Image 1 (tube, one colour):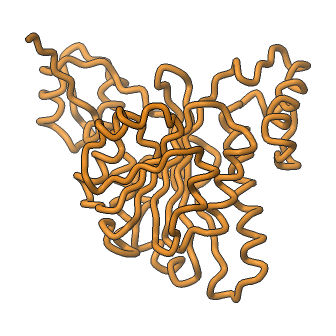
Image 2 (cartoon, rainbow, N blue to C red; image 1 turned 180 degrees about the vertical axis):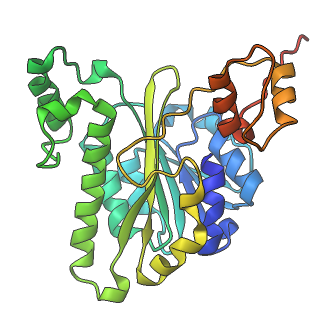
Length: 294
C-alpha cells in the first residue's frame, strides 16, 4: 500500500530521483521493495546497533544502500537534505522526546514534495491505564515520555484511544516546527504538511504507521495531480484506515476470487460475504506465502 501511494509522487518528480532514508535492520525489506519497484538508487539505512556492523553490512541487499551507524538524532543532521526525500522512521520502541526531535529536525530541513512516515508501537502496557479515573495517569506518562510536548487540547479522556493520542503528539510537533520554519520565509517558500496515511495493525504488537507530505506553494498546486485521495486507504485526518486484517482464505479460494476482480460482485462458495469484501479491497496487496520442504 505504501508503494502504491509513493508511486503517486511522480506528479512532483520521478520517484527514482528521491533519496530514501529508513531503518533497515538486518532484513532491509522496505529498501528491497522501493528499490525494485521504483529504482531508487540513493538509499541510506540508519542502524543504532553498532555492535552488529558485520551482520548488517553482510545482509545489505544492494550496493546502493549506505549504512550509517548511530542514533537517528545523531545521524539525521549528518545527511544532505537538499533533495526530495522519503523518510520512514520505523521505530520499534515507544514514543519519547528524541523521536519528536527527529521529526522537528526533518520539519525544519525537508524540501518540498518530501514524505515522512512514522511507525510506533501502541502497546497499552507502555502507557498503562485502567478505568477512566486512571486516564489522568496515562496522559501524565505520555507527557513525561515526551518532556511535556503534548498538544494543549489533549485531555485524559482522549487517551482512551492511545494510537490517536500518539498521532496527535507527533502531528502537533511537526506542525509547530513548520510554523517556526515558515516565520522567516516568503510566502512562496512557506511549507505545508498534509497527512496522507494513517494505518493501524498488529505486527506481533499493536502498531501505528502514519505520515504525510511537505509542500511549498508551487507543489501544493501539483498535489491534486498525484490523485492520492483516490486511493481507498488515503487518510488525511485522525481517522485511521483499519482494514489491515486480511481474511483467511485458501489458495484456491483466492484464485477463484481473483478471476472475478476487480469488481463488486465476487463470490466464493461458503466464504462469508464480509471476508470477500475485505479481500476485494486488499487483493492487489495481499501476500502469497508458500510452504517448502528441503
